[in-house]
Length: 229
Image (cartoon, rainbow, N blue to C red; front, side, top):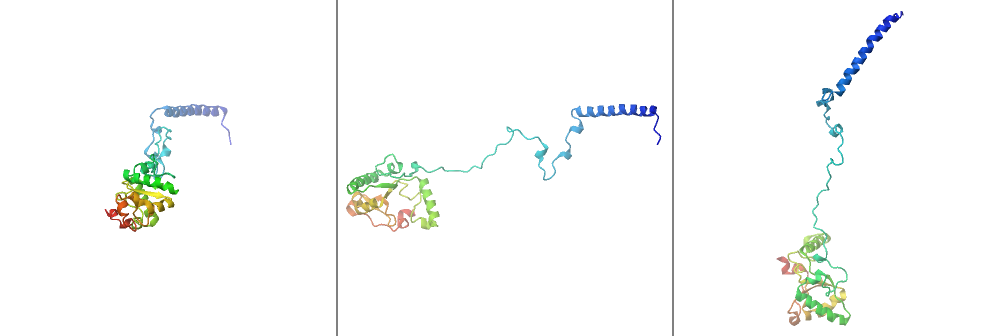
């Protein structure tokens, strides 16, 4: 192969150098030109179906990101002493406990007179339950339905909030067994009577019991006409 003379090679090189420099200058002008069409996103840059469009955008700063919120769950809050929850060891003399202090005044007076006399026999009355809020009564009923398997069976043990004498402050549940035994024998003298055969701890005030004795007990609350209101 015959090589071109030096003068020809020199001419070709001189021709290529200005051409390359010119192309570089043109490209540089395009890159720095604001708003040039080559720098604008086209419709082809939209996310394809199934593609996350966020990959086409800068990640938001922490201050721009939406805050996540847990779903709102309505809560009634925990029941407490104000609802009638009774701490362990409460007696009929504990005025600072709402379940005791909010009992009917005549019922509470009879309980305290009986409790005072019972101490002579070495017996102490504790209060397992007294006056309850409607919310507390409803909670007890829900638990009773779950425990006994039906509303009908639960009704033998727990009344509704609208019928329970605990909600009105007219009933008290006494413990321990020595106290309920003492009241079963002597309670009528104070007007304190068992009302339900299946609940030996449940006492209510019957003011004429001192003269006539306590009325005949119902087998359970479902036999009590007051529970059918």
